[in-house]
Image 1 (cartoon, rainbow, N blue to C red):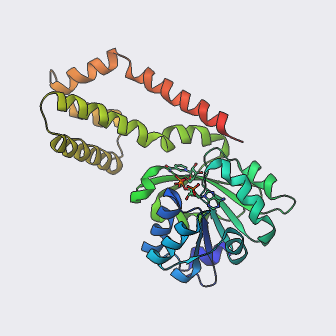
Image 2: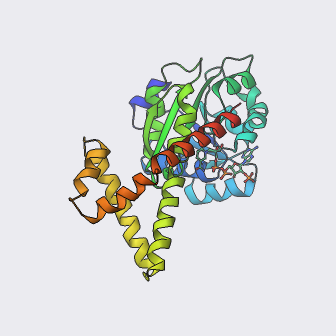
Image 3: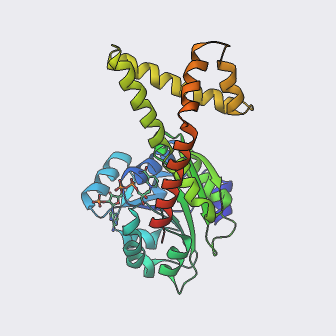
Length: 278
Ligand SMILES: NC(=O)c1ccc[n+]([C@@H]2O[C@H](COP(=O)([O-])OP(=O)(O)OC[C@H]3O[C@@H](n4cnc5c(N)ncnc54)[C@H](OP(=O)(O)O)[C@@H]3O)[C@@H](O)[C@H]2O)c1
């Protein structure tokens, strides 16, 4: 099944169901449709609020149904509900699954072991994924780790999730660090943008101008970083002319130990991720 979907643009016969039509479920559906990963008629959605999935059905012309019917109809299920809702959702759909069903979970802190235990005694294949909010604009980073019974799924995972951004495979033991750096990463960068915006506004720039300045330089910096094979340190040094303004600003960031503040922030996020994992 994995090879069929990965190898063919149309992937005949494969049905994919998304349980939970919130931020992530919707972003995934939009990505799958825009990249034509699967034909529209092979995509199903469900939500605890039927009115929500029915609105998606009207808007995207995919079939809305309930969790159990969706689970019975699909070979691939994407569980896109909040972490505490994953256990109840799996309990609800468990008896509708075939032994070949593959489950993708997007829930933060929900381990493959928890997913497999909940689905026992059947040895259902599960894959844990960790996206970030940038999947909404298809610029996300999505890490994944397959569980014990999900073998040979790499191509399938890439096929389904690459419309949302970069897809990378990691070990489950790296999930807390990945969550702290990438899952939470956009939050840190938004905070940096917020601080820079505030500072510029205090100096008389309008909000609109400030937003244009900051957003453009964040985008440009990201593109330059992505296009370069040089370390970030080298790129940083290239921006600094001797005795110049950037050097003066960076000297303060070093003196005030921004690096140790960031280290502590990542440690705190890693710790929280470990606490939330079950
Ligand atoms: N958003 C992010 O940036 C982000 C990043 C990384 C990982 N994630 C993970 O992605 C998952 C989804 O996050 P999200 O931001 O998309 O959440 P969300 O916007 O709250 O979407 C979840 C959707 O599932 C629905 N739902 C709740 N219980 C359900 C059930 N029993 N059956 C079917 N649908 C049900 C919710 O309805 P109600 O609203 O009525 O409860 C809601 O529409 C989470 O587990 C989160 O950890 C999200």
